[in-house]
Length: 112
Length: 113
Image 1 (cartoon, each protein chain N blue to C red):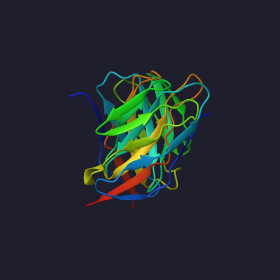
Image 2: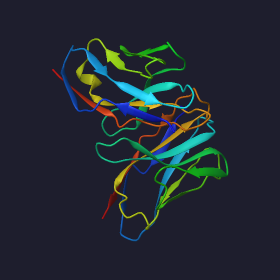
Image 3: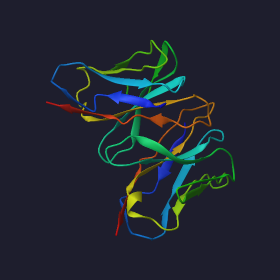
Image 4: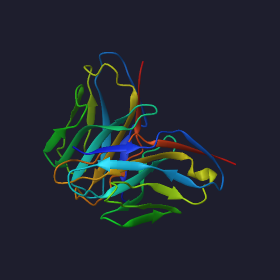
């Protein structure tokens, strides 16, 4: 079945620093790829997604590119803000063979 | 407004008691899911349903039960057989298509007295 490996946290950055959170996956087939974000005490919400190879998902200054050759979907942001402090989950989507799975999450703290 | 709601926000369970967590969606989604989240952990799938009157066990179904009598509703019962129920429970729904997003409720935090 599908599996996902995500960068260990917690990650602490200063405001305006560059962010990368690595995500690699194994899957049977070519799933859509998602990044979800969870703010403290809340449910998850979609941050961005990509549905096929070489697609770039983007939202709120975050970007991730679907790399089929390396089975990766790394999350990046050029300049983080305090309000970006949250937990980020990489999630390969459903295929004909398997259901959606979620990575373990990476906690990000941005300090002023 | 379309969305997914969970109630209650906090729930307390006494030993040996069954408790039911509510999940309702008005997004007209076919698929619904229940996840468990422990502190500092990712999400683990408890049960999911792709259509009314049908559901499947996820990775950690023991000690839990569900029903799907209506498209809008997917309640989760935490039974007395679940010996370590303290966790944050998240309900989600989606259209069921492979490219589609899961929409999450705000969660229910279950605590044992």
